[in-house]
Amino acid sequence: MRIVVAAGPDGGGALRPFAEDGTPAGPAETVPDLAAAVGARERADEPRWVWSSTARLYPRLLRAGVRVARCHDLELVESLLLGHAGRYGEPRSVRAAWARLRGEPVPADRVPADPAPQPSLFDSDPGSEPGAGPGSADPSGDGEDLDRITAVHTEQRRVIAGLDGFALLAAAESAGALVAAELTHHGLPWSAARHDALLTELLGPRPSGGLRPRRLQDLADRIGAAFGPRNHVNPDSPAQILKAFAAAGLPVPSTRAHVLKRLDHPAVPLLLEYKELARLHTAHGWSWLDTWVHEGRFRPEYVVGGVVSGRWATNGGGALQIPRVLRTAVVADPGWVLVVADAAQLEPRVLAALAGDRAFAAAAAHGDLYEALSDAFRADVPSSGGARTGATRAGGARTGELTARDKAKLALLSAMYGGGTGEAVQLLAVLRNRFPDAFGFVEAAARAGERGHLVRSRLGRTCPPPSAGWRELTSAGDDDRAVPDGTGQGTGQGTGQGTAAQALRSRGRFTRNFVVQATAADWALALLGELRRRLTALGPPHLVFFQHDEVIVHAPAGLAGEVTAAIHAAAAEAGRLLFGNTPVVFPMEIATVDCYADAK
Image (cartoon, rainbow, N blue to C red; front, side, top):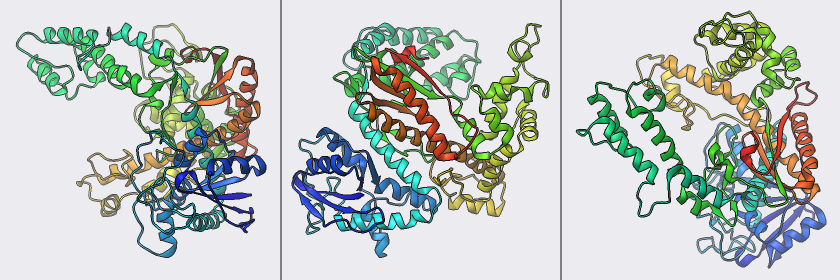
């Protein structure tokens, strides 16, 4: 059963049940307390809920103590369908989808409101459209009603039925939205006291009035002294640093760490230390702690599918970029543990399963994929790096050289990310000869991208099309013109200056990696959905963190073994859902710890 939901004013709303074949299973029902009604129907029927946006509606249900098992998120699915049709970035709201159905002008998506909790469960929206019927006033202000939501859902299901594998993608993306809301609701256990102590140890006491912490000020003074009394240098100003180095006879193009490390100047080590500590202070200092950690929990807002490949993003808080040094602040509650798991060498394994290369897939059935592949690279390619000291390392290479495992890793990463210079050229030749189907798979994706075609993940997630400027440049073949964005959507691929040939290569590198990375995102969503289901059966444990291919479960210590088994089973099931009967395994490296820093 599916139940369509429209949130209304004052905590009310409307529901309409449908059978799985799309036929009505009952009349529309107006309810005064939508959260209570959803909770009652969830317990009775366990339906798949159909609503406009999980990100807007579900957090409010969670605050009312209502948890659901399944949903269909219309906005997320609309984005996926638009992308599949090559219309990436068009408005995705129910109002926009409704307008497309009727051939009317499509309204732009509204800017999301402040995600701060509202004083009541469902606040009425003064800007919603009048006269739309019961339950039509969505708290987002989209002015949606039950009829619109129903019509959009029906059309989405019609389109999905004709796309192989897409139903699973829609279900997985929607399940991911439920997980994202629950991650924020539960929060990652975070010790403010440990965080403060760490900042104090590294930076000195908390400053006041916008002053630099004592350690940063000491470094700033020493940097100024290293450049001499005639040069006033603010270490926060790249322009002043560049000017100071130029005055010292050491002109450099930037203040990036790898550039500075090449210089022989007493200010360099001070600047490198300053940059590292200043980054910590700015991104995760006391201000961050005050803003994001409350009552022992860090609660970021996740953005499902926030990256074109399907990877998640965050709306502030930097949950996907927690510095390793701050992991000491992530501490389980008394009597509980953190079960930390990450997928080992996920993207190469995904490539093995995608390509169906028997030799490559057989290697991917082992724990360490790179080591399993290393025999193909032993003595095939003489390493050009490093001095030969006579001491050997694992795999038979001398100190300073690439081991056979290193070569296997370099070859795979070069194939997936488009490398092809230096020793990588020879290693790619080995990969092409030994594993032709795997190499051919990513090469075909690259060639498709260079032709301006769309490429898709295993389940149908689609890359953005190239921009009109890219098509104009590459069709003209003018090697003296600027290279526009290779994706057309500002993803950072091919945005520099160069020739038409460079534009083609940039697009090829993007699509080469997209098919693998997007399928890895598909797998991760399947893992999350399956793990969430298994954790629900266990009761207290819940997911508290997710980052690309890593999850953290907060669980009572006595259930750590069951959680570990659930993670392994979920990973295996995710592989089966995407790839069927494949010899490729997706092992999870799991550690049960009290503190996140102890996991690795």
